[in-house]
Image (cartoon, rainbow, N blue to C red; front, side, top):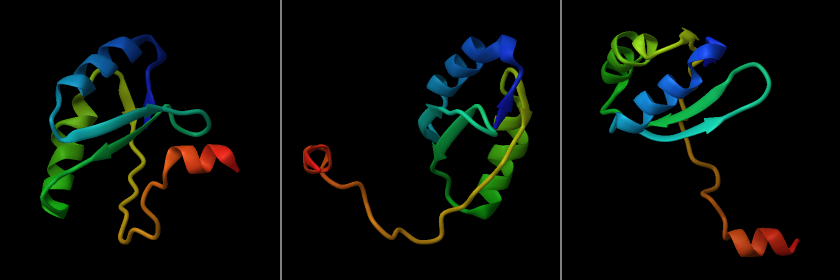
Length: 83
């Protein structure tokens, strides 16, 4: 997602208030944020993108990726840090 740089604070506050947004990560590269959302299906995702996320403060462009299969869940942090 790409944001108007003047509205990061307002966007982050809106994200904090929305129950469907499970995680929000600031990123570098092509987009400004990566969101992990939970909705009931494709129609609900479409509604969320069109009527909620796209209307949050500063949102200029959305890039959507849908995970279709989990290959590996998060590993143990301490085991990863040891390698």
